[in-house]
View 1 (cartoon, rainbow, N blue to C red):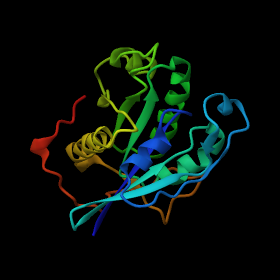
View 2: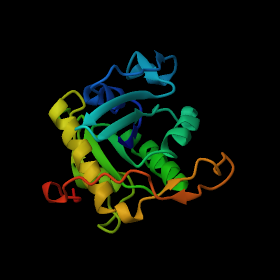
View 3: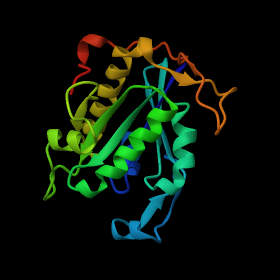
View 4: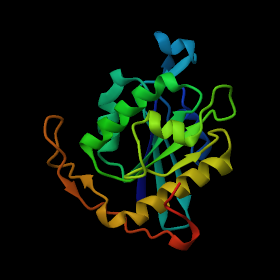
Length: 214
């Protein structure tokens, strides 16, 4: 069976754990603890390692989804998770522009370690103060159309919305599949740059059904 590993990342309170729970067909592995710092102002519990869930696509394909912690003090988990990923989704709460700088730091962190397809998924778009796509992209440092990733809206509580987000990511990964790289685990250390190799997954999603654009 082929396996595709997807990382769901983003800042605190963007909906990562909920996204994984909504997506997964299997019981989700969670590592939530009571929030004791400023995070407690947003929610009572926070992820300190990762969330993990799976979903089968037919008989031959399994999607594994890993949700990262949102706090930068757990960035060692960002490092461990992203190095084995085929693609990732960055969740951004559209109503909290104060967190955009933190989201930019996450993008920079990931890009320094791997060059893999990614999309941006806006959450909280129905809340007061929510910004539109152009404002969010600008806030994340994408000033023009060049090299902009696809950007979509997602409701982490809604199964259809979550599955559509994953399908967009898969289409984007396939569209850029020939250039997708993941590091060689046997030669990569925390102090060495990634040694890229082509992902083992050869799964081909029907391209005609999806667009790699926003």
